[in-house]
Amino acid sequence: MNKLDLVLQRKNTNSIKWDFVNFMYPDLKHEVLPLWVADMDFPCAEEIIEELNSRLDTKVFGYSSFDDNYYSVISDWFSKRYSYEINKNEIFYSPGIVPALGILLRSLTSENDGIIIQPPVYYPFKNMIVNNNRDVVENHLIKTDKSYEIDFNDLRKKAESPNNKMLILCSPHNPIGRIWTKEEIEQIIDICVKNDLYLVSDEIHCDLIRKENIFTSTGIFKDKIKEKLIICTSPSKSFNLAGLQLSNIIIFDKSIKEKWIDEIVNKMSMANPSPFAISATKAAYTKGENWLARVNEYIDSNLHFLDDYLKENLPKVKYNIPEATYLAWLDFSEYEYSDSEITERILNLGKVALDGGKLFGNEGKKYQRINVACPRSILKEALEKIKLSMEQSNV
Image 1 (cartoon, one colour):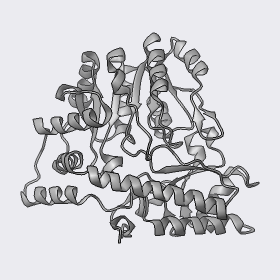
Image 2 (tube, rainbow, N blue to C red):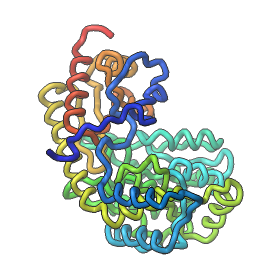
Image 3 (cartoon, rainbow, N blue to C red):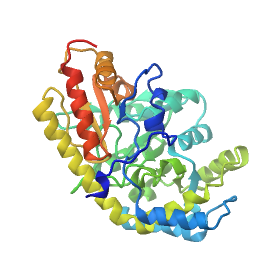
Image 4 (cartoon, one colour):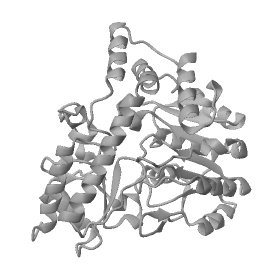
């Protein structure tokens, strides 16, 4: 039996995905099958578990910090896989990428500055901009038959506005699963350089790539934009370690580094990671590559299973297999139901929790985001429930 087919018991483990669905749906009155939050239902790599057990054996879990080996491990991973070099003085700790966005917004921009995002996009981007009293500037992606494209003409116009100070790039893109090409990344960087925009590139899904696709990091162009580039990375998506709360924020410019340190260390005293996070990250990046390859193969297979199932059983639901991530962006627009009715049907008739597409921007109306990083049996059960929910005559 493939270990990734194993259905783990995640209920009653303080799992947001399984135990706290009411965070997303506060009025929920019944249990649901959760395929919403972007974490995996697969068992962690044995090599990581062994490293954590070794750390437990020390029996002391005091304040911890990073050693030189940690920085070397991070540098080696990105050099080997994504062909850009970083050193220990360019790697900074954050408990997560969303908190890092808040820190960067506060330290690099001022209230009412414009921050460009590209909807439909990961909804915490907008939330962090609004909650930090900055202005959301939307460079809407263009829907195509197969996916989405960047509206570069619109991006250039918005970048030229003197009030707009930063572009937050989702790369690979969540929820649509696009990998931006090398040419697209270079165009984005050229626009940011020309207009003196900070570029914050969220590359958290960079390791979760479909077979025969290649991810291009903004890091390969760092020499063009060092003074304005921040790359946000983490082992959390790739190795299912989100609960350990560790992200690596890559900063090249001295001035940005100083502002980061002032905000996160001097003002917030938030510079000490969990000892378990350190051990797990080292193990992931030095021993987890084979596990990651197997997971990517399994996700590939699940995405093809999803494609086949929809074509046979829910032909009105359209989707294109994403180039990256383990998230699928499902288009329910051929149904006559409203956006809210689609969500209500899936949630209350099907008893399946997905992420409603409207969360990601108005372009997401009548879309749903589904997480396929789960055993095939769970995905199949969810799809059967969704099929029934769309066929029933009333909610």
